Length: 178
Image (cartoon, rainbow, N blue to C red; front, top):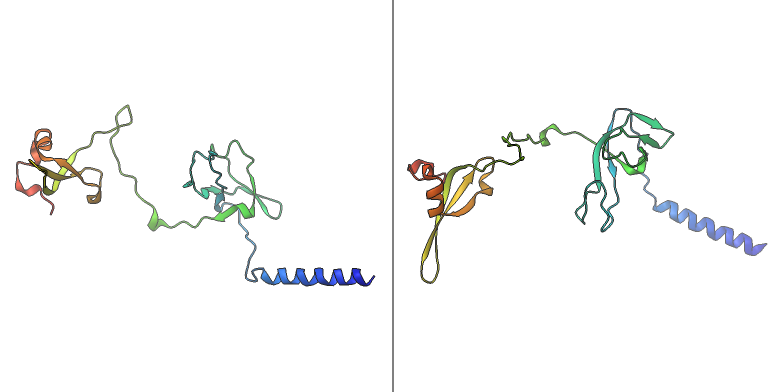
C-alpha cells in the first residue's frame, strides 16, 4: 500500500508541475455568428491542398464566414468551392479570427484584357540611360517605365530596338523622369 501511495503522490507532483507550465492568461476562443475566420491548414511536403503546393504554402486560408455554431467548441463554416471536398465543421483550435483593416485593402488595377486573357505592354517613359562597354563595342541601354507597373519594375532595354518599336519616346526630351 505504501508503494501505491508513493506512486500517486509522484503522479500528482508531476501533474501539478505540468499545470504550472500552462499559460495562465489563455482565453478560450469564442466566435459569434457572422464572424469571419481564417482556417488553419497543415502544410505537408509534396501534398497539394487548397491549390497550393510547396514549402511556401499558406498556414491559414480564408476568410470564411461562420453561419452557425455546432456544440461548445466547433463552428460550421460557409460552404465554398475550396471547402467542397471536406467537412465544413471545424474545431475552434483550427480557426483564427479575421480582423478587417480597410487601410490594407489593395485596389485592383483595371487592365484591358483580350479574349486570350492577355494584354499588350505599353511603354510610358524613359527613366534612365546607360552605356555598357564590352571589349570591342559599346551598347546603349534605356530604362523603360511600362504602363500598369511601378518605377521599381522598370526594365533595361536596348536603345536601338526601343527606338524602332517606340519612336514617340525619343521625339522629345520631356519624357525623362529622372
